Length: 600
Ligand SMILES: Cc1cc2nc3c(=O)[nH]c(=O)nc-3n(C[C@H](O)[C@H](O)[C@H](O)COP(=O)(O)OP(=O)(O)OC[C@H]3O[C@@H](n4cnc5c(N)ncnc54)[C@H](O)[C@@H]3O)c2cc1C
Ligand SMILES: *[C@@H]1O[C@H](CO)[C@@H](O)[C@H](O)[C@H]1NC(C)=O
Ligand SMILES: *[C@@H]1O[C@H](CO)[C@@H](O)[C@H](O)[C@H]1NC(C)=O
Ligand SMILES: *[C@@H]1O[C@H](CO)[C@@H](O)[C@H](O)[C@H]1NC(C)=O
Ligand SMILES: *[C@@H]1O[C@H](CO)[C@@H](O)[C@H](O)[C@H]1NC(C)=O
Ligand SMILES: *[C@@H]1O[C@H](CO)[C@@H](O)[C@H](O)[C@H]1NC(C)=O
Ligand SMILES: *[C@@H]1O[C@H](CO)[C@@H](O)[C@H](O)[C@H]1NC(C)=O
Ligand SMILES: *[C@@H]1O[C@H](CO)[C@@H](O)[C@H](O)[C@H]1NC(C)=O
Image 1: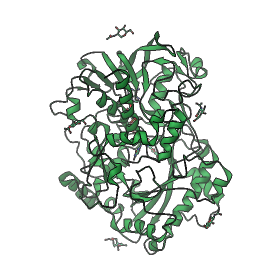
Image 2 (image 1 turned 90 degrees about the vertical axis):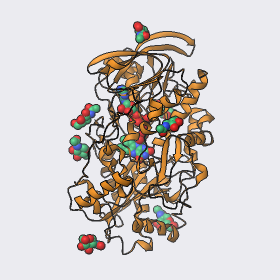
Image 3 (image 1 turned 180 degrees about the vertical axis):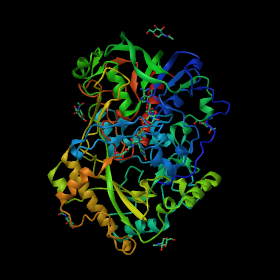
Image 4 (image 1 turned 120 degrees about the horizontal axis):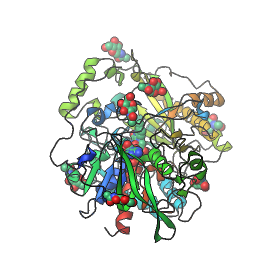
């Protein structure tokens, strides 16, 4: 595949960034009020909020690298490449063979860098349905997780920003549901694929009952077709590293961030009498730097923000997890919490492609080194052109199964409510072969995600070595609802493409499902889909005192004093949304819960 000519621009070197440590020898100390494990999406947001108070000392331990201003990370168009497996920024995980998905073992991308997955993801900014959040309130027994309670946190994290082409955005979003002064920039697409988008919009006029226009899918009522919102500002990626750990925040003397520090486990468990229901506390956090082990201590709290794979792994290696897993590995059980690592959920994605009678697709860039290079040069010079947007595309839809759906007649409905989608459709002005060697046929994709899956998976460990890779089971299509619903979703996509206006623009579909039976489509789906990377739930919330679950609604690990989880692991069910906005909400609310508990 052709790649634009890139040079790694100067990495952070500006003055004022001295609190970002590349070497443990430079770290001023090993004792802090709070030690945050993982400088990812949620971890950096929490660190930034806690250190607003100059009397609070925070250490962030991040295993990965500092991407600095590496254009592979900063340029939205390139995110498909930087999030691939086997880059310097990847943990290089592979799932176990997925029995529901033809036994395929998927490479499972997770970011190994400051900013975590917010620094390599597809930049889609989506919040889910109000009923997703109301369901969290019900599951956790805490109304503080309801949509009305978290909407202020969505806004607090957000800085609505004009798109980089400064086009007129009236009617393309609803200002009142957005924040304008938070650290994470969010904007509409800054480059228009006018021909393709024209067809998408025309569909809302020709088939308004099934596919209505929705002015703002992030209002809590997502159903319909609307414009994509992305974590992009001035044509560049806005991540937890660029947003929450900007130069002003990193200059705070009470915030220290150590890179290349991989946490192995929590150590020195001691009896604690502070809270009767939390009889144990950990004395420190053990981490490895350049082959040597160190311990950092937290006088107030240790916070796990290592993401939905790292967090349950660290808990289990620390003796907090299912004793039936820990004992055979010889790991001393500190707290038997069988739910740790269980009940995870993930979105499968797949879709359909059509060649088009037009050259206005992304293949035009991949077909020509000079077009690709000039597009990159345009981005560098003026932050405009096709590089300002990300692969998920400029428009999207959130849809439900039809009321007479075969799947809904057969299985219970796992969605959170009547206004919550079963599906996401990404309208992408490119096909799949841009990732191959070419030649490139102009193609468009209607990419489908099942955003209300019934399947559940898990993360566990099979070694006492904390540096060994964990065992990841996404549970993809393990519940038969999912493949059946997905197959009906592909039929819905075909219906979109059958709206009259697409005629003459779309060629014959790459795969024609119109002649296939539902069972044949189901069989196809199992082998032709993959993870959406929205994995959550491996340290799920449950009500205080519940016999299951990993954390209480205030995100404290059950039975342990001074230990919280602040990342997407705590979401007991995946929202009908891409999950970075949820990570920021978890961090923003956690910051307030922690500040309130410690009077900070
Ligand atoms: C390829 C891909 C594409 C995606 N696309 C989108 C999208 O378009 N829109 C969207 O909203 N969401 C998207 N997501 C999902 C979203 O980005 C994540 O759900 C979210 O960022 C997770 O945040 P987190 O804070 O829970 O974890 P992370 O951001 O993963 O942070 C965890 C951090 O902890 C560090 N860490 C882990 N273990 C250790 C350890 N032992 N010691 C020290 N540090 C450790 C990691 O290196 C990482 O920096 C995507 C995810 C992926 C992987
Ligand atoms: C990454 O994953 C893809 C898809 O499974 C695979 O074809 C490819 O070989 C992998 N690349 C590396 C370098 O592991
Ligand atoms: C993942 O693989 C790449 C390519 O081999 C490597 O550079 C990187 O260091 C690996 N990541 C980790 C966390 O080991
Ligand atoms: C960095 O973020 C802080 C807190 O959100 C904000 O007050 C400050 O203005 C930002 N600084 C820069 C240089 O953007
Ligand atoms: C951290 O705590 C351990 C006991 O839990 C203690 O031995 C060690 O000295 C402490 N380290 C620092 C830097 O305070
Ligand atoms: C999974 O979550 C459900 C509720 O969402 C709960 O009833 C069940 O006990 C959980 N299972 C485990 C193993 O935690
Ligand atoms: C696309 O561009 C090529 C080369 O310029 C041209 O030959 C072809 O006719 C164009 N196709 C369409 C559908 O415009
Ligand atoms: C559902 O109804 C639509 C028309 O409203 C029809 O086209 C479709 O075939 C029906 N599907 C099933 C499974 O009955």
